[in-house]
Length: 261
Image (cartoon, rainbow, N blue to C red; front, side, top):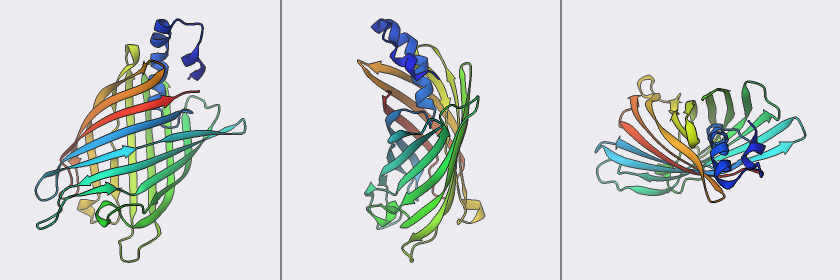
């Protein structure tokens, strides 16, 4: 991917927008692209809890890349969740606040081949503003991502596994896996079709309650508003496997600011 092509100054403003759209789409679809970005991803989960309420999770996900010599890049990806939790039972009230913040740092070759990959440590910090919005534990583990670009297609998978290493002793320990396959088909002018479900497994839960498996997809577009590169996207997922009282389906909407160098 030629990031320099995004800023080819010899193009006219209109031609530049047309030429750079596919490159912008690749940047937003690559979790370890060497570009500063700020996604706001809102997940509206329907059918949560005993009253089938709606839960809302806004994930603020800043991405900061760093060079480490001529051979490696380091990409830090944080997730800062702002959660509205509906009442979880009779006599309880809904709660809104900060959830547990996650951080993954990927070491990725500066000159990748046909397979673009990264691997590194992952952490979840007990930052929740209310007990109902977090686990009360410091989790640590590994995260890895791999992807490839084949013509109009960008295909890949991201996987993270973390377990509790410290935290409030009265709270249950955590061991959780997240796997996010992503399939993108890029169209003209920065438009694309996408499917990026987030599959989770809670290894500490009973067997029938461990897995959340969504199926679905949607579309989006990467473009510019003036000089600012942006990405907008919407997807919908139905959960074909889920813990008891977890959501039936999710509407995900994302707005993302990009700051290519």
